[in-house]
Amino acid sequence: MSSLIKNVGTIGGLTMVSRVFGFARDMLLARVLGAGLAADAFQLAFTLPNTFRRLFAEGAFSVAFVPTYSRVLHGEGGEEAATKFADDVLSVFIWVLLAFSAVMMIAMPGIVWLLARDFQTVPGKFEFAVFLSRVTFPYLALVSLVAMLSGLLNARSRFAPGAFAPVLLNIVLIGGIVTGWWLRGPGGDDRIVAEALCVAVSLAGVVQLAYMWWAVRRAGLKLHFRLPKFTPEVKRLGMLILPATFGAGIYQVSQFVDTFFATSLAQGSLTLLKLADRLNQLPLGIVGIALGTAILPMLSRHIHSGDAQEAQRLQGNAFEIATLLTLPAAAALAICAPAFVTAFFVGGRFTDADGAIMAQIVTALVAGLPAYVVVKILNPGFFAREDMRTPVWTALASLIVNIAINLYVVERYGIVGLAGATAVSASFNCILLYAVLHHRGWFHFTAKLGGRIARQIVAVAAMSALLWWMMPLMAPYYGGGVFDRIWSLAALCAAGGAVFFAFAFLVGALDKDLVAMLTRRRGKPAEIQE
Image (cartoon, rainbow, N blue to C red; front, top):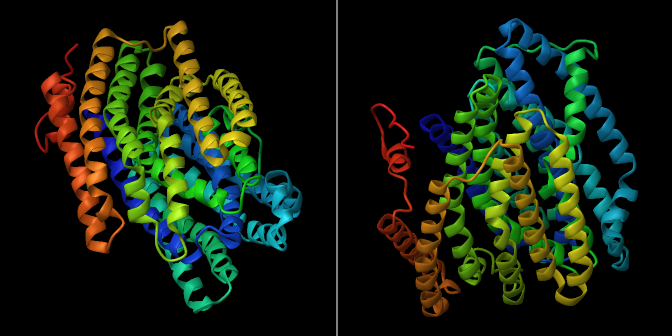
């Protein structure tokens, strides 16, 4: 467990830094653009490369490349074979990315029409969205190369550079917002801000790629550009990537579905949904992505060595860490959504009415937060065994459920119903994945794990009762001045956290070995007690 916690701590800590900068970015964006035409057009333009990034670069490619590269690295050929494999992949990967980006940019009017045809009802909105989408799309090719370089380092348990790269993205985007605000001036056209932001997106890709290339060279790895050659290993990787593109990214595929439905609603709905998802992404990124990234290479090593017991224990530890952190986060976000939204986002061009709707969206989204994170733990159980088909079928079933629910709820409950449908479909996907893993004997709940989670729920209930009582008392403050917003949110977070961990300790929800690993600074790792 010590290695898992160390790696999750590294990835989660740096991801938290990125999320903080991302939060600052969206706070500025809300105040500068509000939830209008320019904001919606930018959100769509950023959604396209960003969702493809999560779906393909950080999803399918990573889950297929890391186990394959790890197997080659620890095989008979060692470093030499791994370097050759990486060179071959890079040489093919670059041309595929260039071709895909060129086709997508040419076809952008049709793509925007498929996702946001209702933008045509607002004069100039559709055309502006197409223009911005073309400006941002080169980011996908750049960040996909970043994902490959990050995979090389992750396979060697060097997680810090890949986890730090998103920080650079948010820093550059903050610079884009400030630049656009300065160029717009008082009473200027909001489209200037959106254009500056989209230029910053592609520029951020260049900055991230330069940083990761430096990090790889610093780690002693050298990559070479060659003429593309489809070696057997590259072909095998390609066959793994194709199904994994869907199987690893149900959440990302659902983003396109949500975008389609959100753009059919009132102007500003897409922006409110994306900003609400930022609150949801904070714990998801820190816990879910960190656990998923850390567990995959470790799980692959245990499985390839035939150590099923260690593979089971690793996933069980990851599951316990995930629920320990996400159950209270989900409950706190759901109850305190009005406080978080008002304190962080309301101001400037972002109105109180926008904030009230966004708070409801946050509550609906975080209902699926534990499922979003657990899926990140369950999927590697298949990917590490190079089984890409099963997650495809579970993802397809969940996507069908998501679309079916949306067809019913969007017309009746609007953007809040759409967010709720996303949470339900993610939970359904989580249940399906676990059922298959359990049936195949690859992972199962133990009485110890189930008891620990039940105790965590008791602690969450105690925390929720306190927060429910405190929210009306804090209402005059979390919408006040800067100081009032800070101390009222700090009071909610501190009180909720203290009660949760106090009750967790009292009812035995905290595994003593887990606590030892989280608190130990020096000394040998504690032994895991069965």
